[in-house]
Length: 292
Length: 259
Image 1 (tube, each protein chain N blue to C red):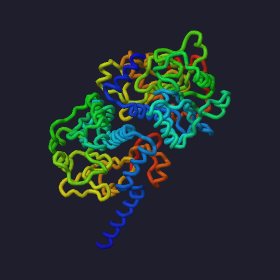
Image 2 (cartoon, rainbow over the protein chains, first blue to last red; image 1 turned 180 degrees about the vertical axis):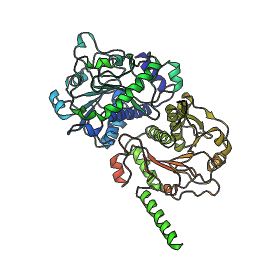
Image 3 (spheres, chains in turn orange, brown; image 1 turned 135 degrees about the vertical axis):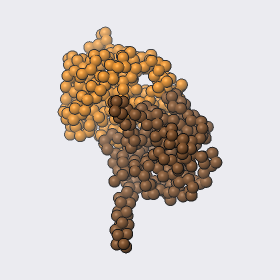
């Protein structure tokens, strides 16, 4: 969590990356990852996505992602509960509206309405700065995402999780377990506990000098890509490669091995993605944990 | 002989017609579309520049991919990105950064820098990524010796002759280059509508990356690779300007305009 915040703050101050650039590149990369995992041809007849955006940067990434998904040809609705405080978010909201993307200000009262209307949900509620407990006005939204049978794709950190760890303790029973996690720039430590079917990394902005300075070990990207799979287990079967999940501490060599193994699996998985829209969200069984 | 000539003209006209079936923007339209993107749609320059630069880098990769060596290693081309003082130069700075991310060995030549936070920050990002900023003015000979590809990000569609003294050297180098030149949006020095107009400094790029929509001058492009990039045009804007553009495949950020 500390490292993630340090990366963000250094990018924005030391490297003078603007928030606009960060959100734009991150959101685009997330949309590209999404489109690879869930090609629109493979979705069910209804084909409508719901993109749930929170009040902070995670929501900002969600707004950019939504705009690109619309450009790529998906049908979608955006849930954006709050009037944005920052000018950057207001612009992004305006851009979405100008793309004729419909908006919801309230989540449906009954989770079955979600189940019925949407085939996939993008979770861009909270990101790596989140700390429990959830604020009251968004607790119900998170609850709906947790309960829905629709597969959830979380941006950067599954909402409700902290950057360092999944929820535990008395609230440990019922927390959001997304089908797919799209880590932005680099995986967060909590992704070690991620047991969903797919984990992608998206966004390529980390300057070499920052990587060296913070001693970050990153997976090997394929040349011109801005998004690619770290783990891809569509059937819950273990991918080849090391048991270590990639984190700031995992070794760079085993990461490269796992990434290329996963990339090969991803190629097969993409063509077999036909049933994705109809499959249920990963249950609380342990099938996903073999991936690591 | 006359029949052969007529057939050849007909063939050329047909292929030009195919190319020119896409919208080619004139100066006024290009300016108005930009204005709309910023004012009406609320995009920021940083946003669009980030996308334009990424598209250019991906076009370079598509046209000039790295070679695999016999020993299994990859040979990454050395790229010199020549950046001008305006937005075309800004696009070049973003392109350089992404080329570095991909694995290329970029260097930036940035002889005249406009003192605005936008450009200062982009330059800082390049420096922070470890990209060398070349101080000496390149010549055609040094370009050929030290680089495999040159990106021309000097001037865009607002350029009006003559070329200023501080750019004469690099323009000569680019027009006499023996390595492939990749021009961003408009080959530098070309008139956005008429094409090459300068007598002595006419750049003939091997690759052109048109941004948003091709410009009218692209009809004079004779290089091997023409790409469209800048996948951010909202459908409503495309409709209001009657833009006829090729579809980008899937989630790609560039599309080839070659036949």
